[in-house]
Length: 193
Image: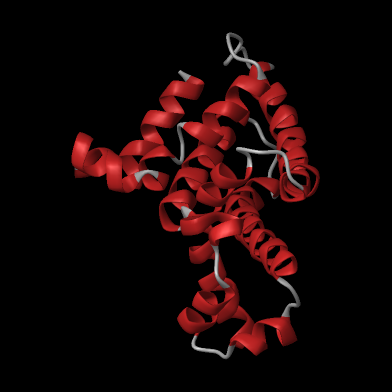
């Protein structure tokens, strides 16, 4: 319970202020714990950042895999529908948890050990899985005009955009554009046609 509260608060803090600007004092206050409890349960700020990012990626993976679990019981006869469902789940997840993409946006502006951690522990495995899934989609004759790398860029930029940049996007484009269901269908159309 204490660990969960710390990781929830640290996700908000790192998403809002980046690693350099994040304060363990603020994290402790938001989590309702003493600052020393962060050190006791996690260690230093670097470890806190890693545990936070790991947890956020674990949540994303769980949401995406939940949709795939049902399709594993039967032969995948329509990889396009499966991929469309993954896109929808990704958009809905990002709408609920924009912190992950906000943290990534902050960290990738410069090459750091945290950037390498993201790349090696989370992003490369995601890209590898996406490449295999996209090859299945292309085997049906769909998406031949896009590479897996194009799709990856669309998934990390277009899919989370209205939620990661909600303070700018909602007033500019209107609330309906930013609903997860509407945006998910737009992203499916952009990627799959």
